[in-house]
Image (cartoon, rainbow, N blue to C red; front, side, top):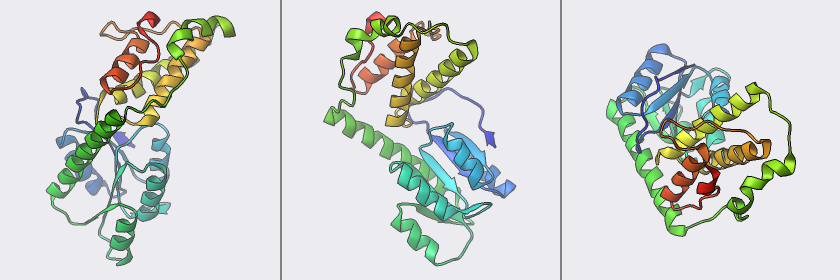
Length: 244
């Protein structure tokens, strides 16, 4: 597995998964994604790619078809079932006539090798546009997924549970996970409800465990950062400024 070096996120930046076992083709795809301004993580097999899905939130998946362990079209169908909004492309030199047909059936872009770089660049531009449209639609609907009045009682939950000190390694893991998912939420193209739920549950867990979470370089607490992002997206702030 290799990933692009971390860089400052922008509103249009995507997390892209590339699964390709041929080194030169993998390098080409990775370079095209980076040149388009996005983050990329590359894997050589379906198994490695599936493992990465538990660690990252991806908005785009670019798959070879003839992969070790699983055909790319089957992996694409799996990804589509579990994430209806992900942009998926099957990039292959396989001339099996069923592949374009099955790709269309599952909303997967079919890109035949060799391909022009513009084909990948257009795929990424379309993914950014689709993400922005979803965000606009969600904001217009004003959906509220969390109904309980969390902010009213959030400062009381730690005392209610009165849990002894949490081991440092667990606290570090919680903070690292929170920061990763909050970073995705800062980016309009990466935003998805999974990151929102993970960040929210982590912050609430920190309250239950009585953890003193570090502040960000901006000076905000992680609670303030979450609430500010929710207001930005037209969502409800869950922790309120009193959480600082």
